[in-house]
Image (cartoon, rainbow, N blue to C red; front, side):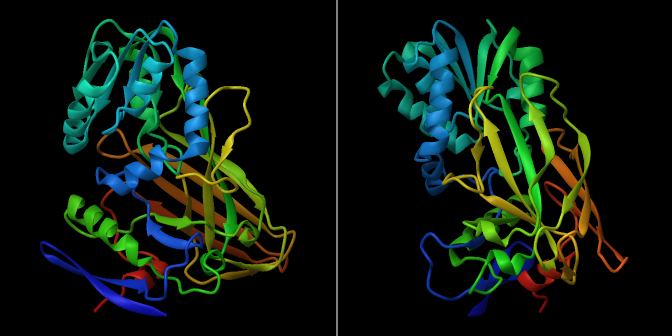
Length: 367
């Protein structure tokens, strides 16, 4: 069952299609992607600090790399989580950086209660505009998005490697990859309407209010069924934080359809390595705070059969803030009957179109 609710921001009243049915604990749900915006609240911080799969991997990397070294924690949050974990693992000193003022002040209030508070330096601001000495030997940064680069990790960590770290310094995590597979959105939300979860409304409001107007937010799908995928996953975005780290990239891949169905877009998800030789965290198949992101390509779903091919070009380039990437997708679906169906999406970090695709016109109906 769907209902219409309204979001009021200065100058705009935005209609939002909402799932009015009972909440399905652990079931699929549609949200806006939130990690790339400065709207963190206690709920979002808790989902990260209680993410056992994530935390286990970051702790193991810090235990391996932090002892007797100076560490830099970018995006430390209100709990100074990785700065604190690094010092507990034996780091000589931790510089903790936080850009969100509310989180910084909470972190400052928490700092005196930590063991050895003199081994921490807490700084307010963007790491790209700060300087400190001596430089760090290890940088730990949990600024990885559900789309790997969406939170600005490439630009931020490329800058940190150049200005804030000693030559040969190491970054945690080691590598992040975004994979994509062909899907239909309604298959990701089985037995329920294509509509935002009621609990997502405050976050939509916060994003629109932060930007000053509505725009086509990226669509985060919580707990999608893995059997909804119509192709295998393939890498479309690769971030090698200790290697050749690119702040812009363009990848073309061919997604071979493996079962019959309807395609209207792609589902993307994160693979993450904190250390080079470990098995990656897989956000599609593991329980973690990273979710999958649905990106629409075709206004009308296209029938497909095994052997059909979705040729996908996936590009990332820095937005006007020179930190967060804008994404652009171009697709050509080649079907067995010899037809070619073309689709595209421009997904900027902020701004851009509103109701540009059929799915956005459905989710944000015009009055």
